[in-house]
Amino acid sequence: MAAASPLLQLPVLQADLARVEDALQASVIAEDSFLTEVASHLILAGGKRVRPAFAVTSAATSDLVMGAASPEVIMGAVSVELVHLGSLYHDDVMDDATTRRTVESVNARWGNLKAILAGDYLLAKASEIAASLGTEVAGLLAATIAKLCEGQILELQHAFDQQRTEDAYLRSIDGKTASLLGTACRVGAIVAGLPRPQIDALTTFGNSFGMAFQIVDDLLDVTSTDEELGKPAGHDLVEGTYTLPVIRTLAAGGAEADELRSLLVKLAPTDGSIEPVDDPDTLALARTLLRSSASVRGSLDTARAYVEAGQRALAPYAGTEAVTALEAAAEHLLGTVRAAA
Image 1 (cartoon, rainbow, N blue to C red):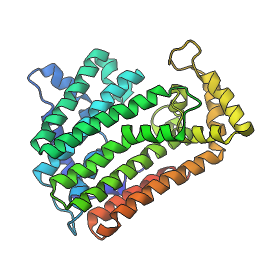
Image 2 (spheres, helix red, strand yellow):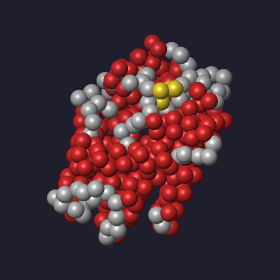
Image 3 (spheres, one colour):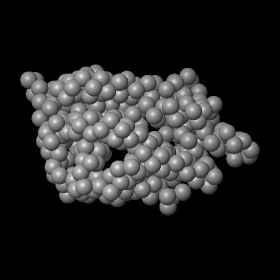
Image 4 (cartoon, rainbow, N blue to C red):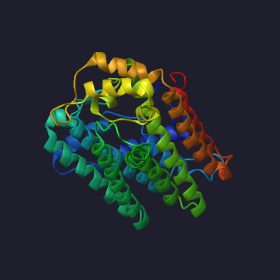
């Protein structure tokens, strides 16, 4: 997504994220140097560290002005990011991806088996750190890893399924994306010792942001160019992942839906596999149809509804620097796709 979120530009948060970066690298050092190299690969490739940023910022929502995070909060942020990174290793194997964050993917460089085991190692290190922060954090992280798996399985079950429902889509993104953002906020709040109602409000905000985040990401796959995305546009259509604008266009019926169905059939494999069909002309037609449909604007409205739900949850705690930054991050998220819609 285009410009950096205002949340990530806070000077005190940048300093804390530098501490997270050092702790991330230290957390995956193994006795075997090869395992350290593989496990560190995507850490060293960088990233926005959105989830650690949410954990650290959530921990500071009771302070008028954000100060440096405690070591425990930093480690909570590290544990959440390790779960995210571990899931990326596994995602790249499933997608047969060749690049990630502008570098060669782990599976492309070292093979699927090593990528899977390295991903497992990252999840194990995340669990180890979470256990050091208390039983509630450990249990929360374990439940979140399970939700990530459930969400991804739900998505795979509906690959190339033109009957995929909106409810099935929302349940999938709740598991594969929103759950970890909600957990990031909750871990930060728990470790910081915030009151239980505030912990729950921050969790609601994180989950709501996560739902909006995935809907926006799916919209950008339809509305943006390869250059704007930094990766091939239309990837979801090629992979048979039919997201909210597709589901709503098909459900609306009429000539537009019939045309989209015929285009999706051309993009779907006919041999029972899930191997992508290389048909750039058909893909371009499908994306053009979707961009001109009412479903893009309607999907953006749905994303805004989730953002507003998260903002309502934070309303009782408004006025602190951290809460203001979280609210600004949510508004910025919508801005990344508003012009294209």
